Image (cartoon, rainbow, N blue to C red):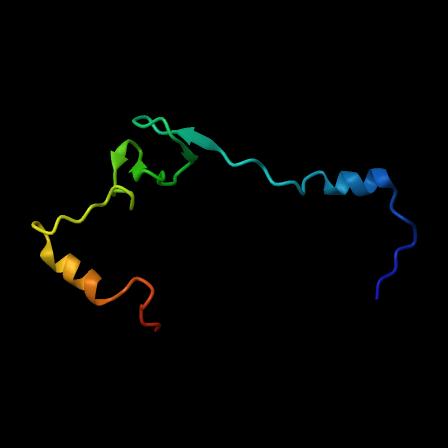
Length: 85
């Protein structure tokens, strides 16, 4: 096992550690909603580069007249009982 010859001073230890800190994430504002988000990442509202990619789960509403199959599937299988693969 390697053993040091001299003890490292506080100054040298801190100089070595000066690059160990993590940088703060770069945030951008969405041009349409103004929401802050990480760069190159879809916002929580579903926007990316000014375009709407998907609806957020809170905004999704199932209309039984438009898609009756969705309601049948939800009624048959509760949310907590999904088969594991």
